[in-house]
Image 1 (cartoon, rainbow, N blue to C red):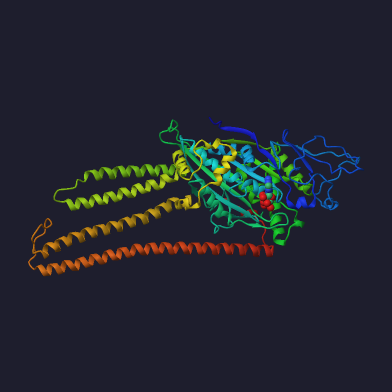
Image 2 (image 1 turned 90 degrees about the vertical axis):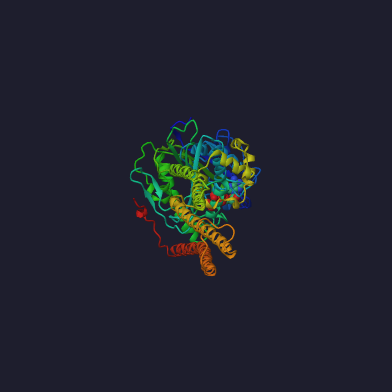
Length: 640
Ligand SMILES: Nc1ncnc2c1ncn2[C@@H]1O[C@H](COP(=O)(O)OP(=O)(O)OP(=O)(O)O)[C@@H](O)[C@H]1O
């Protein structure tokens, strides 16, 4: 049973990555030591020299990088000249006072993604499936491991996002009592401009606020209904292709934008479940965020990178200030509007979400100040108390409810069509007429059935997921509790994108329209086919008459056909009619071909246009960066 309200602190964890090549080359040493038993991280004094009078750290914590980085040898003197290098003793008497912080969990450099996911994220994913909102983000300086943690590095080492998606589908497979509808969106905030990664033509999107509910949302953002794990992954992969990534002094593949992957989960009891009397639909939202990394501006490689860095730092500063205000007892005005990131996350940070923050650091002494600043951010975040609740609505606006109502309506129509079909009894003198009616009724039924199938496919139930898993060779239901290593195996063995349903390309906001359009085309095709069938019947009938006439009126004639006075004239007349019908069939077939060609043409035109918009967007961005003309416009946030 879910408790409907939860007052709880944000979960804050710290993850250290192993030393990278640069740190190893520089001969860095560990400036921090982590004690995973007490979850305390402590700053270490600079390495001792024979003349040193420094005191040992208060907590004798384990040295964690010993297997990954160099031993704690005295660092090169140049390292200490950096503003962020390991600081000298902090009191005039020369006594070293360590900085000490405690969090919910510490992850040593050798800990794997799956373990981070299991202890920090898994619980939030389960809660999201039960109706709570969830937010998970990685925070830390550039090259500290945010993307490594959130996305992972491919199928062999999935990060929080792919592992979360896998658990979402496992959850559905294991819950026979509820049905689900999942939709996703994926956006980036680049230089304070919101771009839609799923529809690259949607650039510079605005943030709106619903004055009634106070809900903050991005207007015009594309959402896709998703049907399987593979499907979600392929949508994300196509979004990734549009993301801004660049090489910096510290990271070859640095995220130059913040990305927000959002999953909306709608669920309701299935019709014959114990809970089916409940009319409520749960709607919850999971935000998985990979923040761009902060970086010392002076060390950025080029001016574009410096400019990006300035935007990144500004928005992270605002995030820090919002977190700081939220952690105070008397909150006062909170400056969500000072950056797009905090504005979009306003609802989540402001209360009704379960939140986990994964702070990523390096233990290396040459980035002491950056890591310290991340740890201070983490400490402030730890004080925030949220009040998450299950979000349930009886509103008919949820897609799952709309589709269920539509399906019920179509099923009624189908029943009615079946009843009418039974009343048509073939045989008797008007047999041909009745056969035609039967054919039409059959076609109408097929149309209704395909509409029902169409909509039913979008609603996920446990059996459909387990069957899909079986056919993709994935884990069976119940596997959400399987071992972490198995989970990786299953992610790695996911099927190819070819198993993706093209139907899921549809934007749910325009879905009804899409369905209407595609069904209208289907209906047209069925009508044309039915016309062809009628004409063929006609042709057959006329051919029979011709045969009868040719044989001099002997043999059986169709009912109601009387022998003509001039047989040759009659044959000619009928042959002319036959030709007419043939032409008609040809022209209809030509029309069908035309529709198909047109569709293909529009489709390829659309692809070309999308590419052009992308190029233009990049060009605009490049020009803006050159001019330095862009300024953040606070009023860009429109109220609706
Ligand atoms: N825990 C880890 N174990 C092993 N390698 C790691 C770990 N964390 C990060 N790395 C490696 O360090 C490099 C930088 O990591 P990543 O790109 O995730 O940093 P980031 O914080 O996202 O940087 P940016 O903010 O610039 O995008 C990558 O090559 C990544 O594979």
